[in-house]
Length: 258
Image (cartoon, rainbow, N blue to C red; front, top):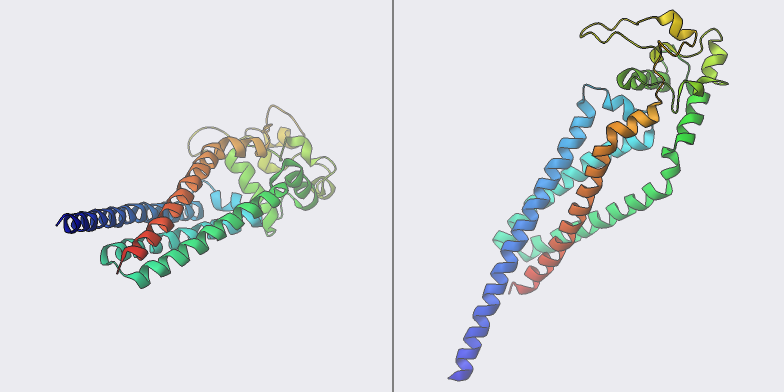
């Protein structure tokens, strides 16, 4: 009689544990679903942002490719979160195993992306951007993607060059336009709403510090993106943690289904 009571009690505890894992699996996959929605939202915002975010990302092919990688990852997390929730509620072993394999694949892909980002970090340095600006920026050639992109960056953030207007010394721009110390995009504009006229373009092109933007675009970009960089880092840690727990719960639930 005692053995039967112990067996029944053990079975009840296993059932309670299974139910706990099942609902934890659902909760974590729900957060995974929300994480996918957030990544999709951020990626979409970057592509349609009216302040010129698309042009800023286009300045570096590696960054621009990252936007589409963000959208793809968000879409995968969105679908996997949805499938994980369904697998937990329906207690489907095939669905849970497929979910585990896909989550593992995404986790490894994210790890590989982090390693690649570390390896190619030199492409995001001041020196790299300065070298590219000196070699390829033409100033007024609107058909050149690199030039038009930098014009959009300098106009959007009221900055000039990578570090300062001095970056245009000994550059392709000065070779093409020997009479201009800085490009037109560096010139200060009127601050009145709707008024985009230059304060004094002639003085600016001659190099007057009073009528040009003297802050470098690298510092301006770091100031603008600082909050988003920390937010993206925190989000990445949260997503990776959720993925790890989701894989653990998926295996526990898979083994608990008869």
